[in-house]
Image (cartoon, rainbow, N blue to C red):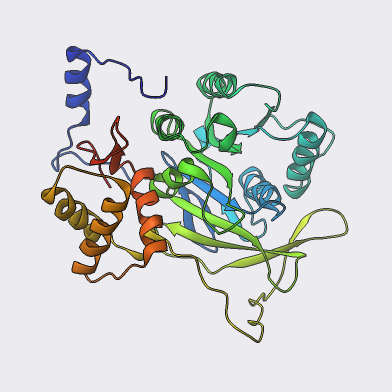
Length: 356
């Protein structure tokens, strides 16, 4: 059942509490930076990152460059990597392609790294999990991580295949919690892929919202609007400073190569493309929290229409004017963030355990 939760005993809760307490008197080590783009860190040990993009935007080619850089310790496209001596091994997981196509990806990585294509690399383990169920995939990766010595980098292409329902908050939270536990417990970096919606540039489903909220870096890979043979990589969400976008194309040898001195294509004449409204990006956390406090101070539950009207007025009081379509987007955002819930009568109520 989606709403079932695992009961935690008092003794276990006390132990977890004590382990979670931080002190300013104890020095916390800074996590090693292991993956860079043009000198900007996008990946540290103990965290995870992600790439998003539409289908056929060359996300897997971009992943190949990241892994190759980690294998050869030299720049590949605009990536450089520096794995510690005791964290040199890499686990690559593919959940979508056949064994034949997975092997093509593996050979491409080896070739980009300057390694023999016909000989396995002891530092790279490649898993093809297309035939497995979501539960089996999670179990296999859990065992692989647990039993791979000196593991520093895990690649998962793609995380959607760990979930039956991409819009399930419970399933999404469970999978993202797995990623956070693996990276923290084993002090490795994990990079995963998730497709974007066809209608906009948002990562798909509730799991996409969770990725944006929890990932250290989220990169977008998209085709150049004027030249479909070029793919552009840029940061969407990043904890460090932004890096300058870069572009690559696939050459005659089916290998990604950097487009030197790339500049974005000029906007075509006519009405400019409107960027989709994004409540996460365009409205601050403080305003969202103020609005919910204001709305649920009036009453504890709302039907859909009343909730939309209350939100519209509350955001306006905070200086944010929303039309009906934007209010609908905000309701979806608040539900995906689990900041509001629906009770048994489908009434909207505040989630007392919500956090931004």
